[in-house]
Length: 459
Image (spheres, rainbow, N blue to C red):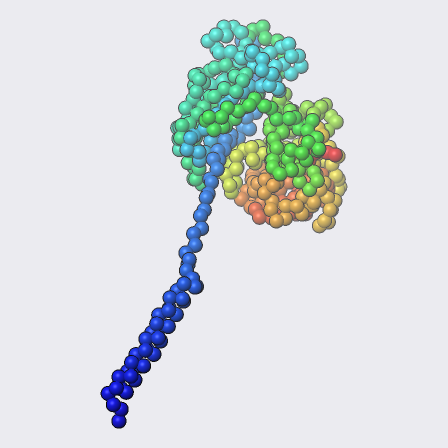
């Protein structure tokens, strides 16, 4: 039997052991928490996103901005209107500046005149009708179109016929952004020109051009004119257009195109749209600045008027053609469709033998690309290899082809002529399906059909 003294010692010993164990357990718990095994379990990702201001301005009618008229002395005529649509996501809105060309070049002269095609001493002055009296003049008038999401403001009295500006002048503005969504109708204005020939005006062909430039409202553009395609070299293209598009100008009609250095060559990245030379009768292209030897070349008419091999036909997009295209392309993006007799400037206008073209309606120094045949080889094939994973540098469009007087496959494909013959009735072409660009496509290539043209810089 354990006496009371022994029991007390045993209890004390037991409590001491428990106390040590308890202390150890508590100490162990503190150590575990301090090891930070479960600490800092929250991470924060910070996203800084810049949405760039993106504004676009496009001609929305089918004229392409090319106008011509024949006046008798004392007669006046209105040309236009050109319809322009602007879509912008910039909360600060936009400003449109205008500048006139004297003939085919910006000179900064006191007057921005229409210049004689053959004699620079003959011109038609810029003036307003009210101040012109019996003198010859040309003037411009702008009008807002309220059908868009936002109605722009016409600046500097250009809602009446006014002087063609010889330096960049703000002519249209919008204080707030327009809807940049997929269903946007944008902000719209029209431009109309009035030309009067005085009774003593020298008979000749006169040319001029007005350029509109869209900018942020706080930034005025510099009065620069793109270089002429005819003088733009392959080396210049490589220097200026390797990583992005570069703007050049076809001096025959004043059209501006983007170009890009791809697969070792300089390519147009917009479809050709020439239908006549500036100051010349409708359908006439002068040969001096074109890639053919004749003095001039004349189209026989629109593709809707005929579909054979022997006549040169072209077609520019109508409002219906624009509406039919999958992405609602502008007239500039669609360009023009040409049969091969037109594309070759009248050289290959038959359907009996295989024939390559040696001339075309490209600007002088530019030409149609070739396709050496089969499934490989040639300039179009090399381009297709470069564009296999990403066609976007070529800016291809799915606008279809023109067949039997109407647009065909407008939402499915884009087609481009090459200079290379395939069989007695057709040429080799390239095709874009929306996701894939085929450099050599050997079907649906009949010479009488209307296809696009992209020219390359000759070496």
